[in-house]
Image (cartoon, rainbow, N blue to C red; front, side, top):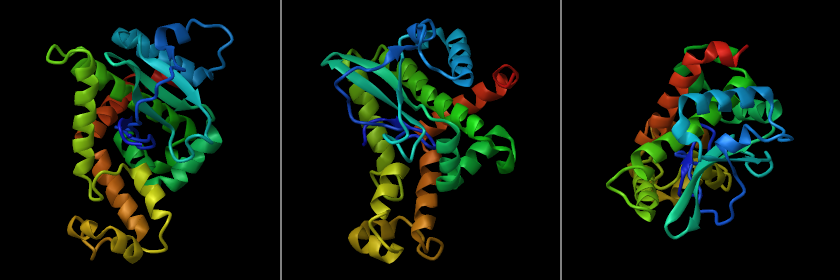
Amino acid sequence: MENKEGQTVFNRGGPDIKPEIKSRKGVPLNELLKREGVEIDKSTSDLLRIMLEQNTFLSHVEIVFISPEEEPNTGGFFHRVEVDEDTFVPTISIVSEQAEHMQKLMETRRSSAERVADMLGIEFKDMTPNLLRQFIITHELGHAVDYVRNYETNPDYQGADAAEEWDLHYEANLLTMPVSGMDPTDLRKEVSEFDNLSGFLEVHPAVVKTINTGEIKTLQDLLDFQELAYRSSEYESYADNFATDFLKRNARELND
């Protein structure tokens, strides 16, 4: 998640995890929805409002809007911002631009978009940029739910222990990937340096032991295989299941 957080199908690192970011630029979810002059599209505003109504324990989770230039290959990510050595704030970063960026992700991360459509019980042809964005945002909030419920408020952890345990578990999660230690976004960056799979395997020979080279013959095959393994992992499954359940239960209100 560059690699210490939770990212979506289209998140960075699911979970989408990024290294600790020292500066706090986010706004707590309960404050964001009360602020005047904050430019949030109705679809996102409705989603965040319903989310908070149904999950009041997320009120302190902070939201940051970022540009698609900052995250060209993702729609958002979860991380926890370090305030001091004992205080960490769960934070969701959301790419602010909608249709064009989401349409691009549907093309470049098609296997993930197809999986989202399947989880939502619709045909891929019926997937819209707005629905994909709703899923990504909700998925990242699913990581926040996981963090708050199972780490931040877990009586077994105190203060920084929660953040440390989250990182350790997530890093262990990444080590089980076909290309060990990389989430799909990181791998996409890495393979962009190579013209073909054989060139990649020369530099990363250990990967030969974790993939079936009879089935995986191209860099795109490798990316799809990594994406599938990542989406099936414990961290990502938790967030995917949360997002799927939330969007199905609230489909009528979200699509009014």
